[in-house]
Image 1 (spheres, rainbow, N blue to C red):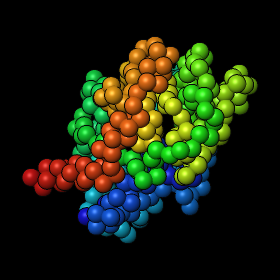
Image 2: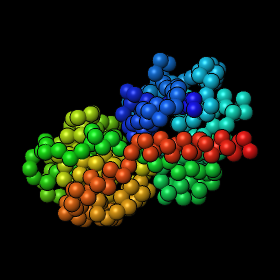
Image 3: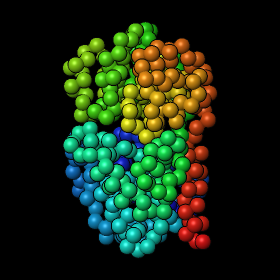
Image 4: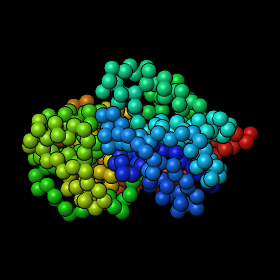
Amino acid sequence: MRIFIATDAWTPQVNGVVQTYQRLNDALLKLGHDVGVMTPNGYHSVAMPTYSEIRLAFVRAREARRKIDAFEPDHIHVATEGPIGLAARRVCLRQDIPFTTSYHTKFPEYISARLPVPLSLGYSYERWFHNAGSGTMVATASLMEELKAQRMENLMPWSRGVNTELFRPRSDRLFGKEPVFLYVGRVSVEKNLEAFLRLDLPGRKVIVGGGPRLKMLKSNFPDTIFTGPLFGEELAKAFASADVFVFPSLTDTYGVVLLEALACGVPVAAFPVTGPRDVIVDCKVGSLKDDLREAALTALEIDRNECRSYALGFSWERCALQFIDNIGSVTFAEAA
């Protein structure tokens, strides 16, 4: 198939959505599909308010139509709700072209955490954006139930994968021999990092990543190690150097970092919420509790080999095949 993906999330941005589409692109190519990607790169852009690392490229629908027509796709997937996603969506609706979307980020909750915007307004936008398509791909069963409750339609399961060659157990102990409790991800308000950093835990806490709250958290928690963003081998070594991966977020839709930690043999401690409870379905690889300190201490006792074995069940090829199945079901329905 020739698959055209319109996404506002792409390198040099660093987040789970970018990683998902880069890995999906690689897996689809290996499976023999042709992929065209429209991204913010090459267009004039501005920094997203409160998210300076994310650039919003304001692209007109006619530019999206030119890109789409030149690629001649069999299917169009609109990955994000930003300006590029809006432009591609507009082209599809004007030309009566079926398209799928995906729900990656709880933007209504994120916006409400920063601005006095009610959740109901945010979800009105999400319904308007996604329900116009032929199907919306969703990472987990619990998130699907939440979105159904918000009257979103035609929801399709689409899981994630992990690079188990890069993320693997190692002998590295970058942060010392004492217990290391690690978080990897954006350092921003919706990640609820204070809930982790305030915990009374043995050993030390490590935060890997950058974001708008990095400077403030460094000042407020001087005993924590803040490495800034890490990539590739350095990131994998940081994961493998931890004893427990602590994920305090209450708003993530999945959390690819959970799989990366498990692939390195690191058990997970998190709240029992959407995302963690869908990934950590086996208590042998993580601890989900309302008391995050108790979860972290319980996770210390988990067998690292169990974590690695569990992660080996996830692959980006499997993720790509599920993506193709979703596209196929839409194509079949439209043909009928």
